[in-house]
Amino acid sequence: MTQEKNTYSAAGEVGSVLEKRTFWTRAKIELSKSPWTARFGLLIIFIYAVLAIFAPIFAPYGEAEVFPEPYAPWNSEHIFGTDQIGRDIFSRMIYGARNTVGIAVATTFLAFLIGGALGLAAAINRSYIDQLLSRAVDVLMAIPSLIFALVLLSIFGSTVINLIIIIAVLDSTRVFRLTRAVAVNVVVMDYVEAAQLRGEGIGWIMRKEILPNIMPPLIAEFGLRFCFVFLTIAALSFLGVGIQPPTADWGSMVRDNASLIMFAQYDLKAGLTPLLPAAAIALLTVAINFVVDWFLHKTSGIRDEQ
Image 1 (cartoon, rainbow, N blue to C red):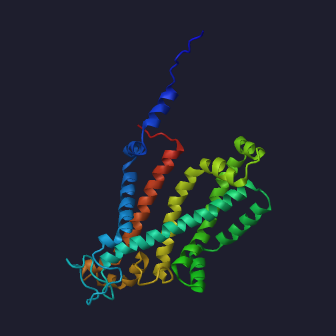
Image 2: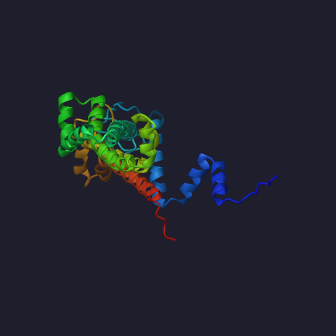
């Protein structure tokens, strides 16, 4: 009769400790180790998300509610004054967060769904499908995306659905290139070949073998791609073919109130009014870049200098 010896395993002890930690505990530990830039970025993203979700609660007035005094100055009734037809600018900025950010998130998700699926399919099937998709993507990327989107929206109409589909298709080309580039290095691994020999389907190999191993660069690209989509929507709205009135949008708010900059020498607050939505766009873009930089540093395996 033999007695089993209890051997100490450091890896096993670490694994048991990690299993006992909840998601929120692990998140709190990671957040405590993060730099101040990442914390600032997460705080800004959280504030924007809360304002976007609960816009009707935080906004003092309706999105399209019109008051009798256009271009009203900053006062207690209208914190940032009113626009050219008498709508409260503060309320429209809050609603603009919901519209602009919400459409940008939906567009980015659709772009990753299209580009990611096609990129994985091209990486697995290195045949005429890969060549056909790659050449089609090269053609689309050769055309400036903003000009191409401007032309397509002028043809098909500036509805929200058209805006999401057109920008998602154009941005999916960048996602396709990245997904294919990182997936090609995973496809040649032994465990992928073993799955193919077992007779697993392409969909199963994508979900179980390839996608989990390429998630860090895709997540980082999602943050950066969201910034580009967000800025594209704002630019198209500024040009008049993006989100259409009376729906509030930060890009169109900059265009509508741009004439107030000329009155800055007489009333500094009035001159700052068109810069408020522009500052909101810039702040969210910087915050997302802070978080993406921290995530890339964390997943790279590089240790911080003590």
